[in-house]
Image 1 (cartoon, rainbow, N blue to C red):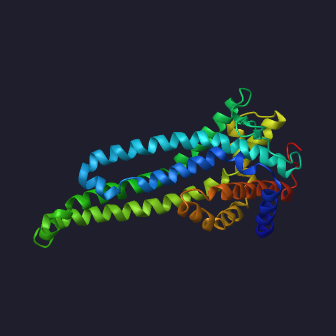
Image 2 (image 1 turned 180 degrees about the vertical axis):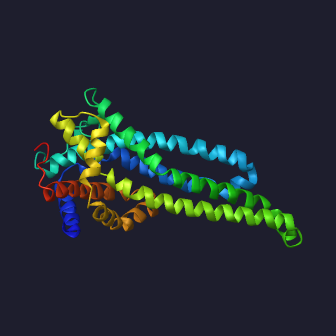
Image 3 (image 1 turned 45 degrees about the vertical axis):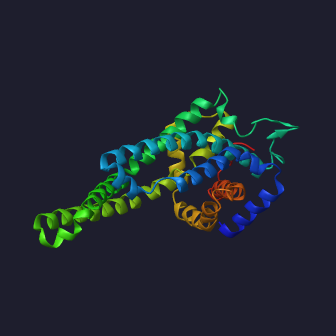
Length: 289
């Protein structure tokens, strides 16, 4: 598998496919709003000093809950985009029908909300997120320890002048720093554990689309197992592919999400081609053509 040729083919498909950017309209708009919202948010340390640790933690949880829900909804649109891109890559589609005359129709970008497929899509995407959350448990515990310990260190900053003369305060700060270190170690261990699992599940949406198209969907667990089996020996290549897009992700952040108009179709088309390449290397026939 030549990743350079894969990216080149992705750019070629992006140029040749009319309406491909509009297919990602909802994810693009969400990305722009998300970046602007994050830039305009209050600084964390200012929140701690102004509102206190407890209120800041509650505020942080409340702020995180809504983006999680939005991200889950957006995953439906992305799955629909993958479904359509598979058709494009396989030569079944030359033009993505998103705008018909003057009136806008979400024909391709909302196909996963159809009553016939929304149940399997919901269960599969939810299961994937739950499993990834569980695989990241050490990351959550470690980051939680680091954040709470850092909160308490910041709270003690006004007493820093008395630190050299107060043994009890020194012991407290030392303990908090130890918690930060332990939290960091747990977070690193968690990333080492979770990262391979993230890539093991990376083909779930594509396999889901194939089974829905072929009307052979059985269960969310089978989709997960198929993705894990398919990615054996390919996690590293997919990781390298993602690394090549870091500059594009940075450009998206710098431009307040505007660059995602180009980046999203490019990146997700490359990921679709990766799925197809893995199928061919494993001598598997795509489920639909």
